[in-house]
Picture 1 (tube, rainbow, N blue to C red):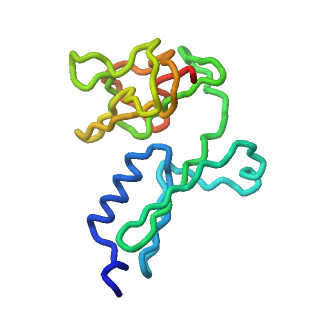
Picture 2 (cartoon, one colour):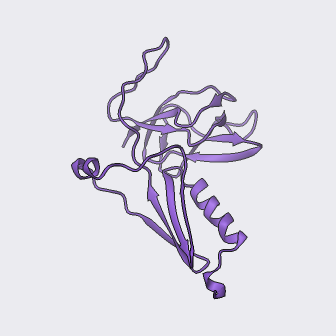
Length: 176
């Protein structure tokens, strides 16, 4: 086996960081020489072809990266199914067409970079896709969460230092 066909520990760490830093991606396929790896996170199942064919929205482009002599293909996650929100006391609704920034992981939600600092965003503030709206702490690691879309913050749904679940709505944006 040639050296370029081997997967190193550093290559594997780069792959993990790439997937971890891209919350919109939930699966990838890697083939290096005779080694082939398929990973999925968040319990996402592949969409059936019939559902994909009926979807009039354009499909996002796959990203391809070359790592350790192999190719890493990262596919965007299928959007979550549109199910009605569970009817519970205090459940909040937001206007149709709103962009919801959801938690890509389980952890602790923080509005500001440190105690006593100004929050990353306030209601009424315009944001760009790469604007950090909060951080989520997981095992003492701070993960910056970007807005993911341009818009104006209309609601912050989680209290500072509150625990959050995977997929939980955090911030509501009115797209611009």
